[in-house]
Amino acid sequence: MLVRIPVVVCDPFPLGLRLYYNHGFVLADIPMKLASIASALGARLENGSPDTEITGVAGIEEAGPGQLTFVANPKYAAAARKTNATAVIVAEDFPALATAMLRSKNPYLTFARAIALFHPAPQYAPGVHPTAVIHPSARIGDGAHVGPYVVINEEVEIGKNAVLLAHVVVYRGVKIGDNFLAHAHAVVREHCRIGNNVLLQNGVVIGVKGRIEGNITSSEAVIYGTVVGNIEAQRLELKKGSDVSGDISVIDFVTEQGCQFNGRCTMNNNIREMTGGRSEREEEVSEAASM
Image (cartoon, rainbow, N blue to C red; front, side, top):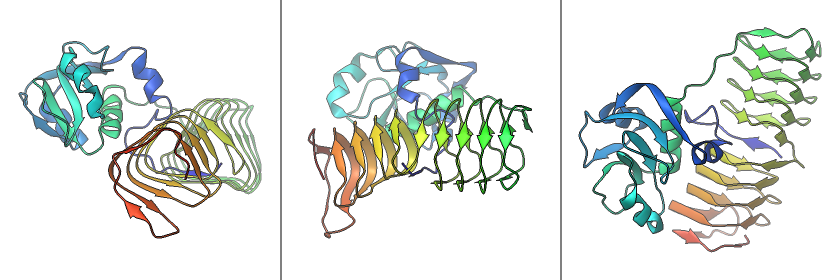
C-alpha cells in the first residue's frame, strides 16, 4: 500500500500513539506551563491559569493532577467532567468544563503533539552499520542512520536525516523524502513513494498490495491499500480499491468510488467524493459504512 503522509510534529510515534497512552502516561523532565503548551500546540486556553504547571500527559481515565489529557467526542463529556487531569484538550465546540481546557480544531492531533512535547524523539548518530547491505545505485541523503542488517536495493532514493533501524528492507525503485524513520523489520515494497516526515512502526509493510495493522496519525494521509486500525488526520483520501477497518477522525475527508470503510467517522468539516460531485457535512458516519 502506498501511503503518503507528511506527518506533523506529533511524530515520532503516530502509529503507536493510542497503545502508548492507554497503558500509562508520559512525564516531563521539566514541568511546562499551560500558556507555553497552548502556544506550542496552537490551542486556545480557556478556564485555566496560564501559569498552571503540567508535568505529563495521559489518557482520560488514567490522568491525574498535573497532567494533560484529551477528549474529542461529545459523548465522552461525562468522562471529561470526572477526569482528575489538570487540563483537557477539547474541540472548539465541545461543552464547557470546570477543568482548564485547551480548545483545538483537532484534539487527536493536538494531543499527539502534546505527547511529543513531553517525550522528545530519541537521537540516532549518523552512520552505516557494517552488516547493512546498500546497493551502489542507491542514493541516501546526509545525516542517515542505517542500522544492523538493513537492506536498501537498487535505484532507491532516500532524503536527509533518515533513520532505518535493524532489519528494515527497502525494495527497488523506492523514493522516500526527508526525516524518514523506520522501526525494526519495517518493509517498503518496490516503487513506492513516501513523503517527508514519515514514521513506520515495527513490522509495517508499505506497498500497493500491502497492509498496515496499526493506528495512523498525520496531517495528511492518502490510502491506496488496506489499513486495519484507526486514522486521525487533518486531511484523508481513500483511493479506489482501498479498505479501512477502524475509526476515522478527520477534518477533510475525500473518497473515490470503490473504496471501502468499516467503522465510525468523526468530522470537524466535510466529506467529499472525488467523483460524482457529492459534498456534504457529517458529524458521524454510521458503523460499517461502505463508500
